[in-house]
Length: 164
Image 1 (cartoon, rainbow, N blue to C red):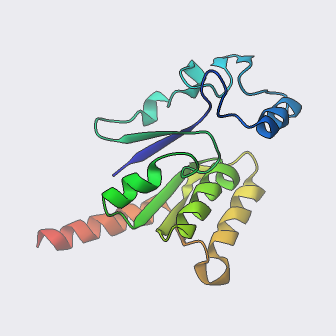
Image 2 (cartoon, one colour):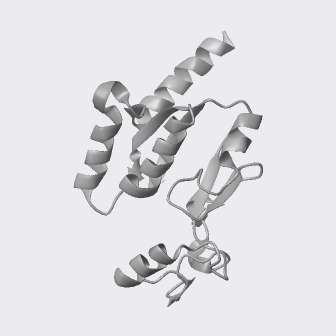
């Protein structure tokens, strides 16, 4: 199962916390204000869409989230429980923000997590690397780390064994 997430807010901004709005304003890109791709982080605007290269295919779930983590104020937890999913593979941007928030929420809910180093990105490589160091710290406190090549090799080997 593939789940896509989009961070953004309702057009009326009713799900945008005032503290988050102010922080975005102070950072120079106030959420909900006009930007080069429509209103910044506003659902339904061109800048809120998933890029063509990653566009969901039929049957893939899209979660619109008003917070950094994919579980906050969404139905993701129930969707995963309904499908009896207990293991997650995480990727995305930004590593130290949305990916890490989702990972910590997932671990708190009892999911086993694998985060792919080469499938995450951050504006600052030091923050990216620090997040992965935290994931593996204290005996893999927040799950496990791998990369896409190792994952694909493992899945290919498992597929071959299952076919035998």
